[in-house]
Image (cartoon, rainbow, N blue to C red):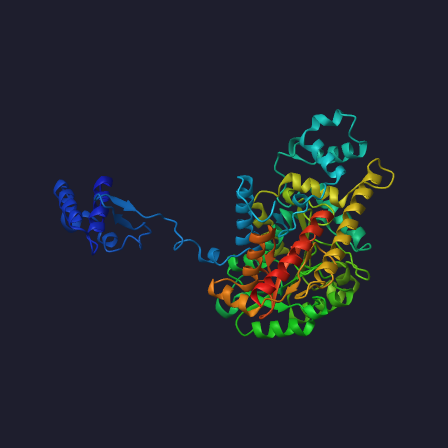
Length: 553
């Protein structure tokens, strides 16, 4: 049977059906009769039976409610009950409740409200420039020239900065950074990245076609996880991540509906990675999911450890034996401070292990402009290199990144400068080396200072900060404080960090936001503040912990 329904009358039909719902008010009954009386269509022919028999919810329509004045009020299409359920599972501690409260405190201070402190010191996130680290002059000069090419005629800019800017602009559509680039990234930048990797890895070949420029390293990591995640139930993809971990990983896995497989770093051995622990986590996970990938952060975040070459070899052998896709997050590769520690790229070690591994193990490695001596977080520049990826999968990856058109072109330009900085003999070389060395030396000093001061506090234990930009000390929280935190519905280390923020103005991130062994408590703190401010921060942490312990003992 075919129905032809006038739009207005069909709308009336929907109202009639809504008023037929149980619990309709008396006024609704009156209104319903009025509408039916006014309509030439009455009885069962008003709506097609197939539609009238379905509830509003099943037809994808928002539920309608009767307001106090008798008018119909439609509920919102998107509510907390109707959003994608995986989104509600996403947590990102680095910008969580502690940081939100820190922003409120800054606002209150600016409005003249009295606090026990004069300023909020944010040590929660690796945002180098926000903490006072100065940009590299050469990088900013070239970016200025690329953004405003008229400056190329200005004699105050060195010639090597001008030549870099010209090369970048010639690779841009219309010679402008405002144009889209190829989805995989500007060809000349990918070529420079490939040459950089070859130099870094002692001549191991790198194909520019294996390089994808990304919106920071995070974008590349999430994109790779999208390719890996599939299946349902016991066949659902599992991804192994270190605990403690950088919350990007747990957040991305929650959003994608993947299974997070935790393997624990060994705190007693300076947060080392043990193969037996990897095996334990993998064997247990195979009972309920399909483990397909192993994520490694080296140097570590939040733990600051630097993996030995032997450890990397062991991980590669493990991945080969268990047929796991390796993801190597290497964004802190220039941040290595401790004596006897050295950065080894997974790719270099992989190829030095011979064809048995270099021809078979699938690897994606990631780098960024946001960390190291650059600290250019806001430009969102990065790259990933792919090793042994199936050609058909690579085509799908290219399609996936094409949907987002391209990474930010200024970020691509900055990535080019990171991998192709001033060379000996060029006008900017001496100043570049001076600034780079000063920044890394200052970070090394602050890493050592942080470890030394925290280890003088009874109830705080801090491993050496071998690399990266953070310390992740263990803290002892008295049982009385644990009980009060539990009563407030908070994790004990969240309770500790929030109390520290309110009393000292210091913003740290509780270890529970990164994961930790049951019964242990930590916080993550950046080593980025200027030395004078870092000393103040550490003294305040020491004083607070002593006071907190005394209060709850």
